Image (cartoon, rainbow, N blue to C red):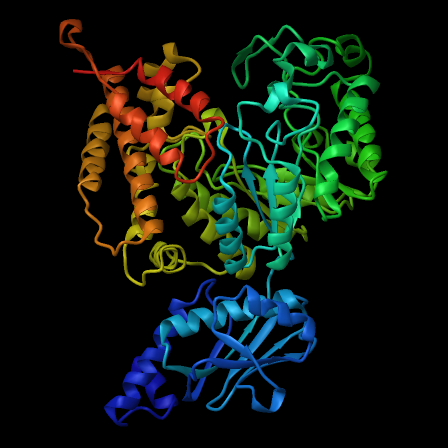
Length: 624
């Protein structure tokens, strides 16, 4: 095959130097990420001048010069060796790059497409700073919406620097939307009781993030849960009057016991309260969209609304609240998005929703029925989105096989059923104990599939993480993150929304742990997994004094340490032992390291709660 390609390009039986250049050109395609859908090589090479002289026919694109990492200087069109031509080429985010021997010409119709093209050119120059093989690249997305949602309410609120680094990475991966999931971590002026220990975002910070996003052609969409998941408010006395169940509730599936409410009581009083929050929260965002949440109203119908639910049904009551929220959103000139889980329980209710309401179908397991659910919602005529997950929460390592299948399915079914696109979610359930670095592989995978729909191997994704996050062409940490995230596969463990080590430490029903574990795995498999983790822990990565890599290695090591602790606990639960041999472990060093690593990327607020949850779970551990 290689000989045929060489012959086609006139390189067979040619001089060795020319053959080497061709092989270099072949390597280029595997170096670019997201991987190009269409890349055609031509003869010759473009010798890269220093600096490149650029001209944008659409002068509004000149602002990109201040954010691109490329060394560019403005030039007149005649003297430019990098020319951006304004032309419609089939999609507003599409770009076409033609690299000739004398000039690089880029065709785009929007600033966003020009930025994507600049990212692609930066990667090409990283591959070879002196010369680039002549070629033609034509790129366009398969999905219009390529969003990412980060949970910033479950204890971990990132620093501004961390948020900005994330936005830069999202831009590189061609995401065009960011949402920060907020329950209580916004500094509402009249509600300090709720957020005072959690280092919330201020209005000024949200505006700064909004501007940073806009400069990079990303839409920052406000996200504020407006019905369920209100426990951060309803646990405090001043807000208990707004609760469906102010004294708490019990639920069997998923299992939970709470001494405070999590759902607002449906009605005018709650709507007026939410209206006051919107009044302060929404002006800091420039987006015309708003995700109001409304998912998982666990105890709806158990308290305040019990009689009404018995009379007209839970779904009618829910729909009335949704319409009330919709009116609050629309009076502010925004369009409403909401999580679709309750709607999917009775999908015919979609017929009662106005076209301005946009459901988001979420599901985070490998076999989630996106196909069936998307078909149902699509038949309603509503504009909708699919939301897969990074599968990093309730885990110390991530669940790579779950993330890969889940993200792939969501993108494929969004395309199949004409969804607007995807909103890739990264949650922080139960304390957000997962190291930050675990999000990188699924984030790259999501960017790849949402843009092109093309497969990318683990090796390709790992290498791209090394280059684009850590700035090193062959480092190995990116692939190591993927390998570590396959721990559950190695131990044959598969309980939805859980990794084995996390489950062994944090299960809500510890009395059922031995049985649950024995149904999933064996002590022998756990010991194999433990030995494998210990081998990984001994890896010493060689790298220059680069802070990003140092932080990531510390996070990777922390994930291993926590996983070792969880697996050792699982082994003890599954194997008979002599109580006299039982020994308690000292976890003070592990907790200290957890604190230290947390503060490398996140604010102090919320840390103590996360540590308390972890310490409580570790108190139960022992070994023999």
